[in-house]
Length: 311
Image: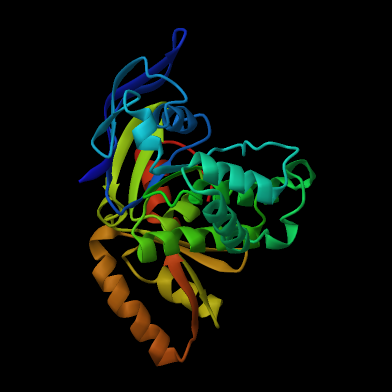
């Protein structure tokens, strides 16, 4: 079953085509990464999915119901976190979350208890009585995440959820997203322009550029491509460079900032993976780092579709 399904979803602003013929398919229980550069059409798409914008044409189904015709029924089971947190600046965090809980259909006492739990869960418990306007942008982001969760929705739509968070906050949020998927079975649709975050969080991905869906599916299937360029760090880099230079299947090898970069002829990858470990073991050289030079998703975006992404 697809929790989100669109057909030829299109949005024009004047004569500008922002989103064109988008056919999204988000399976139930998936963490679906909506990945593309800034300005690709991600936020416009999300606004159409949540009925904040009407499509120029095309169809949207969420839980098998048509959007925006069944918006009220759909949104009762959707938690939405916008790119720029929207909150009532003069409310305290506690007051705001209770208010959102009541809007989500919770009884007053239930909303109070849920607000207390969620403030601890997202890391703003000690700020409960602070007004929204007194918070940093990162703290507002955490409150917005709590607001998306308070109605216990089965679908979360998160637009650039790690924006404004410090590195530790980003790690914590990614952990929460994974936890909500694995332990509670929530379907999570998360947009980002950061490849590494999508790879950590998601098992499905849709790649968007210039308003068009370039590819979508399981990350494990989309990234089944053979790598030919690797980063290597060992206890004896000069010896490794000399060894690799003598191998006929090595196209190029050089050192950059202490890391060996090597390009291998694809048809001889098996030979490289057999001979290289044997040489390390024979010479007693310790391998400290071995990885593809680019991540599989980044490679797809950069090489196949000629777009720049953040990692």
